Image 1: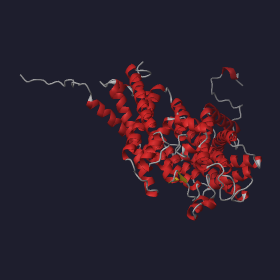
Image 2: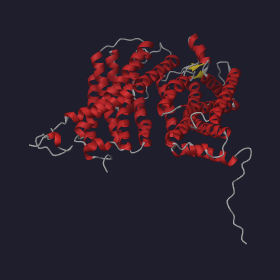
Image 3: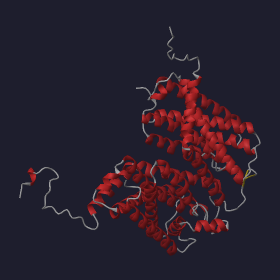
Image 4: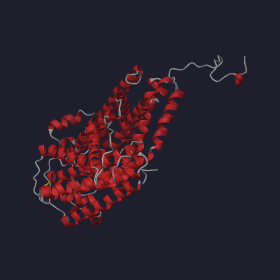
Length: 267
Length: 275
């Protein structure tokens, strides 16, 4: 009597590693497939900003806190590229899945809310860091950047990308159509990113702006990240680290809760 | 003669003159109306987003470079910047409007509606270009009003400013029609913007006078038609410029005419539109 073998369900332990890895791989492949738009385009745009500011300075050697302006500017631009892409990846992946209906392929498998949240965030994080590294390499060809505190660079890059990926994920879950997402990008993320001290030292602006900048999480990302490269800070490194850790925890919990409840995901 | 009310819809009725004149005005009007309604529906994105973006750029330059800095040619740097930012918004919005509309129609398949209707290149191309122009002007006006809030400045030659903005918007609207015709997928169009339109618009003496640039770079900038569009517009706003405004007007008109001829020819051939 020959035994008939049926495929048996795979036992899923406390963590569904296979499912988690698959989803992360899907998220990474999703943006790598269109790398011209997701990696090359942001790098070109960032370099364009860099070139424009170099030209606008017209060869005048200007310094901020004793550092040449071009060295002051570079870390901020890299950080802007990292955060904007981490946000764009998580939000567009979630929203496209919802609009096209293939979100069911993610919701039906035995993946927990924690695994889903982490996988989406990891996708955004990887894209953000990839864009950041390429931009850095391109800028380093023109203006060699010192690396004074690698730990700060790594921490701020990862924490900021995670924060924006979480924000993107929440935005993607909340938005019903592309207009909503475009509004969040145009009216929230981009202004916060630009008015953060990327282009100027926060010490040199009027008091109102100075105060507002300290309410802007991007200010802390860029300040700490810049400190890692050139050792220049507007003096709030400790607060910055606490703000970033706190914001990550709060947003992480919010995203997890939305997915666990199926808010705007499950009918 | 049979009673028209008893005839089925679309029946042959010889008493109606269906000959189409050289320029099919109703067709042109219908298409223009459709395009403008599209712009109207997206008004928030067309007008508000560029104005916000321009004010952000403005703030960054204000603090990043210092408001009282002068350029080599003597204007204050922010005076120099306003015309550039207004024009940047006009140009990119005009190109975006036409290319997006055309490609969207191609991808969704509704381009058939305009290919089958009795309108040809001479009606379709102007309709697209005009809607692109109006949309560009709307967004430019928003940016200009926004800049007045932060940095009030007079306009030296208002009529010339309007004409330069309109001419440049037509030029870029036609370039957008070309981009829309070339593209078959969204990837193509976004590549067009990232690697052609945006770099060409930014590297145009928008932020700094050519006299301050290295010679090789200045030569590239002076070969860029957008440089002339911006410089002419800057003359109209500030009353001073690097080029003779007549030269700028000629370059913009000439480039626009070349784009128009290309668009008419390619659209008439049905290149990447039919089949």
